[in-house]
Length: 345
Ligand code: KG4
Ligand code: ZN
Image 1 (spheres, rainbow, N blue to C red):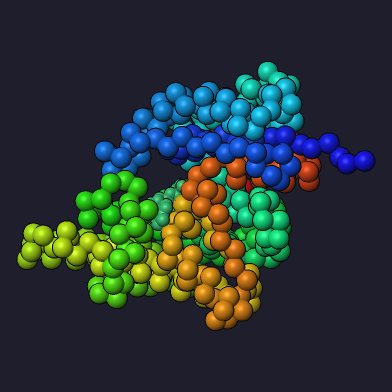
Image 2: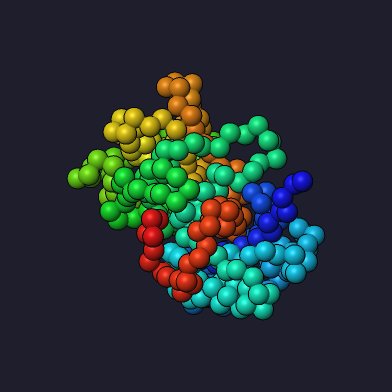
């Protein structure tokens, strides 16, 4: 006789996306994401506005997730939520909603670390049943708007930080460079789009050095982009519009080269050749292409998440909760929203 399936409602509200997902075991039945467009005109996320928008979105987003999954709330076995890291006001909306909902339904509450969610999204069962998931240990480069980390993943619950950014995150390097070019927030996806028609070698940018070989630094890169744009627009006010594709391709090439160099160093240090990427920047077409190429060139095994699980989403929170649930790791009493939380906490 087959075991009864486990239905989990997961809620993600750590930054500027309100998301709810329903999982049946490791399969995603629905994954609804409400993006907050309000931040675009400010060139970055405004925390106060983000928490207000979460308040407005949370009920309709959860309702939609239940409808799309075609299940009733009484069928749920557990509720999962992002405990941190993230913006406190944003986290509080998801945490409070999840806690109350679990209490009302009298079912377990599962707290999830957002960064673990990005990584464990690789274990969501894909429609293509032949898709292989990483085996342990593997290395994951987590690249998002707030984080850039190289992590050795030894089990679903063991994460060792091999290196991380000492200043800006890779997503910030994309977004701030894009802002310098007058592009809307978040600039990463736009940079990717314009780069497609450009020459990545036209404008070389410096590759920063760090004391620890596996750490990252992007603040020097960002300043170099700013100076480069200032200098060239002083000489030609139309410099950006006349060369947008080449500038974007060159910036993207610079950031991706920094990321790939660190991956190579991590492989050399650890001997591990199973490499995954995760987080919003893993949606970038150039890093996806270059990582995939290592399979042919060096025989590595690489794991690139489907687009819908790269940027913030509740499905990744759901899969993490499911793995905790089936491995009896849910007896936590810590349900407080926590703005600063390391990947291994
Ligand atoms: O994981 P995420 O949705 O939120 C955080 O937890 O930070 O990541 C958002 C980041 C933003 O910086 C955004 O510009 C970047 O991911 N991003 C991209 C692309 N799509 C999203 N960066 C480069 N190329 C993309 N295609
Ligand atoms: Zn994220």
